Image (cartoon, rainbow, N blue to C red):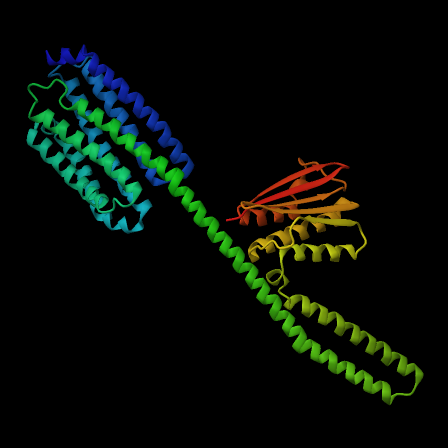
Length: 448
């Protein structure tokens, strides 16, 4: 009678199909996350969802298929249902354990509890294989094993309660709570109300699966869009710090080299110049005097060049000057080459920027000018700098040969360097180029 009621019960059939559909949707999401993140957390969750699907399908087949009461086939199906329940409980515990570790490595201290649960599950299946009829009909064995499952699961539950200040744990807490409540309701219905209930707690489990996995999806969405985003920001901040440290180290190294050139090599060249002057006075022979004059000239020229080099290495002009002056000085150096006309447009000479921003902008400009000299064969270069409350916009133009954006030129070292420097400050670099028309590069950097 009870079997026929479930067989023809639209509520039972409806809740089975609803749960299967919902878990299938969740399963596709978990498989995507597992593929995208390659994490044990999503792997165990995917296996957990797959086991729940098999459990629901098996219960549906057992209650609506050709499995009459008190037959060997129905007894076997009941054992399969019990086995799937135990496997799903183990996978759920594995998933929670891995999720807690992914949030904080300190939860690895729960490993002994997890392995104890694994050993308990293995023992359960050994007993099931050796004495299946005992497992199927023993009410006390059923109750004791389920209580053990709840006690071990509650141990993980307790640690989640202690860390509800972590948002991710709140989602896990609510999900586990729904599962506990539905599991207790199912256990109560299948024992206390076994004679009056036609579903023996199955419908409570289905409700629990729905609310539980809704919370888990919320946890994954939170982790994907919030936690991982914060991680990316931390990584970016770390990259910026490395960039700043690299610039500082380069500056210190150049300063050290400049001082060494000035103090060591400079003194030796000065001494060599004095010796040459002394030789010039001691030698009256015209031929020898000409040779000494040439040597003296070379030494003095080298000394002058060395002083200029030393000055450029020790001069921290980027830190000490406004961005307007830095770019204007760069343009002036280029004008002395008489290779092309260069124009700088900026509506304010008093723009104040941090050292990091100034260093990136100057290096990008130098890279662009160098590319234009090497490859563009241009006649005119225009640099334009605009600063608003939110962004720095740097526009670089030349009227050179240009290039096809689909070719290797678009991925050259110079452009790659510009892109990397822009990325350091979380900016955007846009390249526009047409053959025989010219190239335009727009760099936009947010002011944070």
